[in-house]
Image (cartoon, rainbow, N blue to C red; front, side):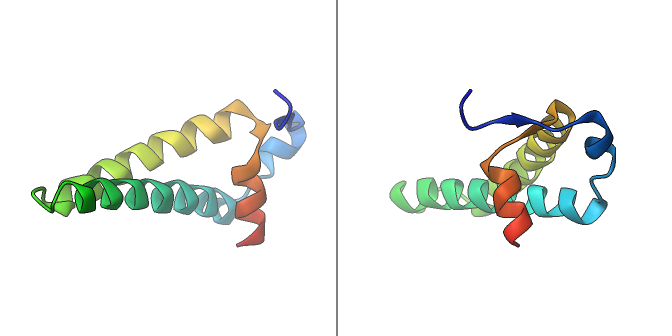
Length: 82
């Protein structure tokens, strides 16, 4: 893929908890925004709490997959800017 770059194995170990939290926060905000948008256009017939819970769990899984893959993407660039 053109936009992804491999992080060297030594650098991947040096990712701190703060950086991992920032990656998680980006995924979480994106997912909450998507689910809030779905809820808005569904005439607010859904409770937003399950959507937030699903966003939380999905963001945790996405962060784990992202960190383990070792690829640098736009999410990493956004996390560095936070």
